[in-house]
Length: 266
Image (tube, rainbow, N blue to C red; front, side, top):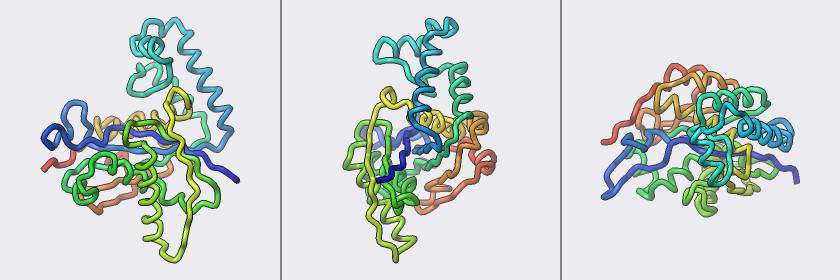
């Protein structure tokens, strides 16, 4: 059977509540938005992996990067891989330049973390179902495909357990059927949950997600602008804090509307 591979990662976090069900959105270490992104490639996957591994070795062999704490820590614990949050600016530039050379397409769902929108929509079931909802909006255009979808997903604790991913797929089917009730589909989807260290192509999804996160959390647009041509779709959920608010943003539109803006926590 013909297969189509996608590589998924996230940015920000799906956390709404701290101890005692206190809302902690926007506090230190807690994001105001949660982002789930998916990249696909129109060139040989093995070749891209080989190039990423070669680039990693270039970083590790370079005297310029010797003694960098984020690199040395990974080397000591499990091995180095590209990760936008941890990498120093010079390495980010190196990897973004590499991404620019690839024939790839990136889709993302950005959700404002609005408690008034979250609780009715998710029944107060917390971050796992929030992840599943974003996944459904990312997948629903793809579920009627005639080929097998192989979703290579960066491991993220409970939210990427099989039962939660399956719930996201079911939500995606319902979204599709709401738009096309006359079409009956039986999607063929494989969930392949992996660590970034084991699947170098997830590093690309990580970097592209991070470029969006900088727009929404910091108002910093230069990273997104640099790789903007790789983005094919951005869906904004809970737009303006409305539970049913969904908006599809164009590439240039995000640069003018995607300013740092924390949602209301009332």
